[in-house]
Length: 419
Image (spheres, rainbow, N blue to C red):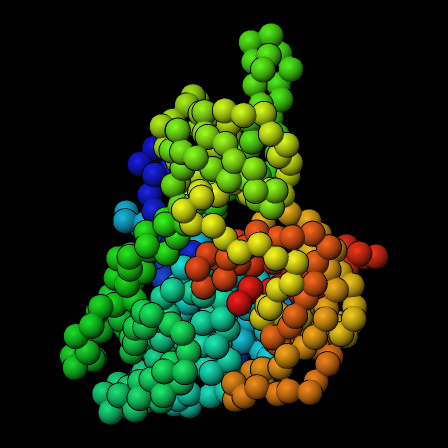
């Protein structure tokens, strides 16, 4: 069992236009990697028969909402878990419609890899551009373009090459470092888990091979040490009478016993006395471990402060430039005030300016607009009531992201990536 627990976890998200076959692809991955139970398969066969379909509809595995099954579309983010002998996986199946951009942002925010489906008959469409842009905006390090439904274009290499050139034209504008192209048929299973007999011309890896072997250890920033304090541990017991530990999850870098640290935003300095985990002490800890840190000095530290090392300080400011995706039906206006949550820190903030809005279908920058409606993305300036210690989102996805919360309703209304 411990072997299973120690396995590396890959989180990936799927995106694509309506009817590109995202749910079928996930169903195929689960089916061909033997990750579904016999009773699930039986229920699937019966449901497919009832719908008068001549083959087992694997899409029904992920489309869990009744409305999704009736309309044959994906509405909400569906998470699925499965494992192979090499890795554990969490899949976020996100909707393709423009009105669900926010759902894609939610599902993709923690992903290591994005699968973007392209229908081989239609090639690159607006939604392909939009999903590639969102994946790049969210800093997803690895993107796999799955050219699906190759069976409907007679498995033609010329069509695959044409679509790859269309995608390369877009991805040159985006900030993505690792891109793959795989010709597949999710319905027939070509190049998903098993190699395709029909596409001898393709000598790259299957989709499952990429998922099992893509290098993700380098996706976490292990250079810049960041430790947002979540909780102060004071047991008040005879055994641990003087214990004062700062608990939280390391957001970047490595901390060792004896390291000099700076507490932000106060700037006070100390040295790490011990690093404790649930079953004792360790000499060093690294992201994304959860630990409790004791310092040599009694200094004033509370939730929302951040421990960092003096040789790699983050930025500290009350004014931030962010890329903001608006998640709420009520639009955002310049001058509006919100509650802000960044790592473990809370503050109030005001929207001071909308620099430009992104036309998500053409990637053009639209200036002069001061309102943001649901599912829209813009570059926005905010002012906060307390200084925040942060990094650019590109450098660290945890210390570089924040959410805006409406104070009256407590709803999360915006997701921001710090520039």
